Image 1 (cartoon, helix red, strand yellow):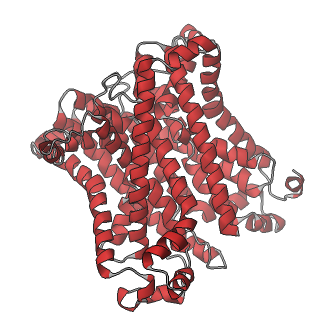
Image 2 (image 1 turned 90 degrees about the vertical axis):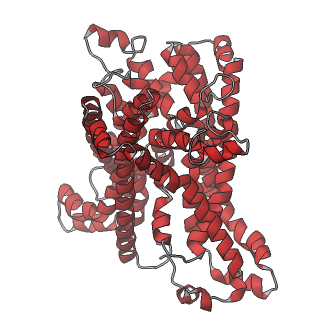
Image 3 (image 1 turned 180 degrees about the vertical axis):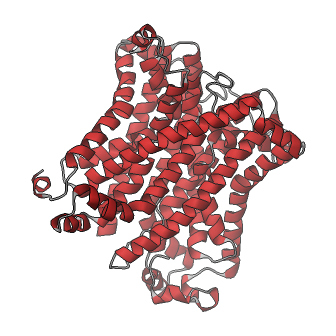
Length: 304
Length: 275
C-alpha cells in the first residue's frame, strides 16, 4: 500500500473518523453499484464464454480444439508471438537504456513517438502494410518480381502484430529506469566492470520485474490481436488464420460452440495474464519500495 | 548533449541506433506512406472520399458512440476507483485485478461474448428486449462494446492519484463545517480532474479506433451501424485504396490531436503534483 500515515493504518471502518467517511448506507450503495457494473461487464461475459463452449459437452469442446484448422491457428498464433514479443522486448530495453541513462535533445518527442502505435486504430495499422507490401503497394511490384509474399501471408501477420505491440515493453521500462537513474551503472563502470558485465549484473536484475511485466502485456496483445491481423491475413484457413481470426470465421458460420471453445482458450490466456501481471506488480512494488529511500511516490500500480 | 559526452556509461550509440532504426522501419516510415498516398490523391478527390454521406455517417457513429462510452466510463471509472481505494470488502484485490480484463482479453472474444449476451436470446438481451430495448445490432450495442473496451482506463488513471491524496485536507474541510458531499465536490474532485480527463481521453481515443469487439455486435449496416474502421476494412476488401486512405488520414489526424491533448493533460497533472 502506498503511503503509511497513521490515520490510514487505523483502517477499519469502526475507528475511521466519521467526518471523513460516508455513512454506512452510502458506502454500501456505492460498493454495490460498482460491483454490479463490474459483474455485468466483466464477469458475466467471461462466464458466458465457458458456458457456450462447454454447452454441448466436453467431447464436442475438445474436438473443436484439436481439429486441424484450430490446431494450425493455435500454432500460427504461438509462432507470431514468439517472433514479435522478443523483437519488441529487445527494442524496449534498448530504447529505455538510451532514454533513461543519457541526456539528449528531443527525448520527449521520442517517448511520444514510441507511444504512437497505441494511438493508431488496429485497422489502420494493418492497412499501412497493405499500402507498402500489397500488389499495388510501394514495394508490391518488386516483391512480385522476386516471388516474395508479405501480406496475405505469415510475414505480414508477424509485422502487423509487432506494430501493434510495439510500445508495451518500452513504456514499462522507460519510467522504471528513469526512476532508478544511472548511478549504479556508473559506479560499476568506475570500478572497472565492462559495459556488458554492468548490464548483466546491475541493470538486468534491477529491471527484471518491469521487463517481465511488459513482456506479459505484450504477449497477451500479440496473441489476441484481431483488427490489424485481420487486414493483412487474407483469411486462408490452415495457413494464415490466427486463433482470433479462427474464432471469427466459426462465429460467422454459426458454429457457436466451436467458436466459443476456441475463445475459451484465449480467455484462459487472459486470466493467466492477469494473474501473472498481478504477481509481478506485487514484486515490482516491493522491489521499488526497497530501492527508494523516501516512502513517498512509490508507484503501487503502473497505469497500463 | 554535453552531459552525454561526460557520461561514463557505454552503449548510447548502439541503443539509440537500435531504437531509431526499429522505430523508423516498423512505425514511422509505414505510417508516413498513408500521408504520401493521400497527398498523391489530390485535394478534391481526397475531400470527396473523406466526406461522402456513408463515410460521414460512420464518423458520426464512431465518434458519437465512443463519446457516450467514454462518459459512462468516466462516471463508473471514478466510482470503481473510489470504492477500490476507500472501502474494504472481501475479494477486493481479486476485483482490482479483474478490472484489467478488457486489456488482456482479445477483442474478438469480447465481441462474440457481448453479442451473444445482448442478442435477442441472450442472458441480458432477452430481458431488455422484453421492455423494448434492442442492444445488439444497434448503435446502443456499439456503445456497450466500447464501454467494455474503455473500462480500465479511467479506473487506472484515477486510482493512484486518489491513493496519494492526503487525508488531512479532508479533515480540514470537515472541521471547517463542510458536508461530505461539499468536501468531495470542492476538495477531492479538483485534484482528480487531470487524471479523470486523461482517462476519459485515453478511453475515447481507444474506442474511436476499436474494431474487433464492435464488428460482431454492431450488425454493420451502412449508414446505420457501420463504424469508421469497418468502412476502411470494406474499402480495402474492394481494393478502393484511395477511399480507405482518405478515411484513415482523418482518423489519424484526430488520434494525434487526442495524443497531444493527453500529453498536455499529463504535463499539467505533473505540474500540479510538483506544486
